[in-house]
Length: 316
Image 1 (tube, rainbow, N blue to C red):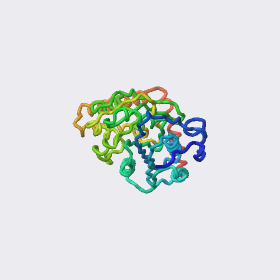
Image 2: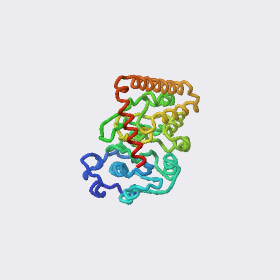
Image 3: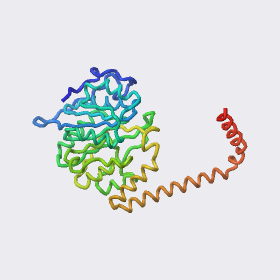
Image 4: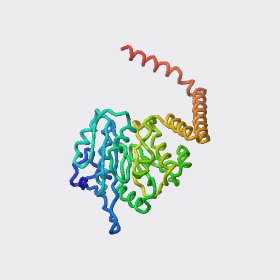
């Protein structure tokens, strides 16, 4: 087990700031257990590929938890940006890392989980980060009932400026509630950790899925185990143009509808398809309104001139 560093011991971040975990003095308060108990080992896997602009924040948020029984694994898919340079900067506090070609995010997570040894497991994407004491809070919830399959808490989705754009309702998770994921029964993925027993009985993450592999995995866990909900805000997820679900929202929803069909939840899939159709109809109506507007007709000569200029530039 590696020593857990303080912010003074860690290298200074490339983009130092005055917010967790990028400030020079960023230590989380160490929480204490009731005498006679010990902190369960937690294994965190970070899958990564060309996320050099974000991964340092991710790494620091894990290391500065101060959690005394932590295993941290980073599986990078052969990044060509500054990712590896950042990882090497912190490698003495990382239990294992590798940078090599893989078959995508879910494959990287499976590789990391397969070599983990923790009692509690989770993954933290390389553009997300934990808040102070998050792992302590998860561990304390687990120690209250070790028969559970997963623990989840609150999380916030923020944009590039740090403004909160989504806060989940955080309903009690069950198999049934997970099929309503697209209708407000969601939670932020980094705010969920699961037990080794749940992982062993649920199998590998489905690598055929590109967007919905996390929800599909939780469905499998929920078929055999209970989820324990805690109210603490544990993590921050970043919405940015390169994020998968941000750049391809419709495709991600369609994939989840297919997951619903796989589990025989045709009604949930139908609701998703109906919503997509309604949104498409709304967009077409708005398009038709624009095309029939006076301003669109007035500016038609200007658009023709602009297209002509663009063609001329292309030829030059």
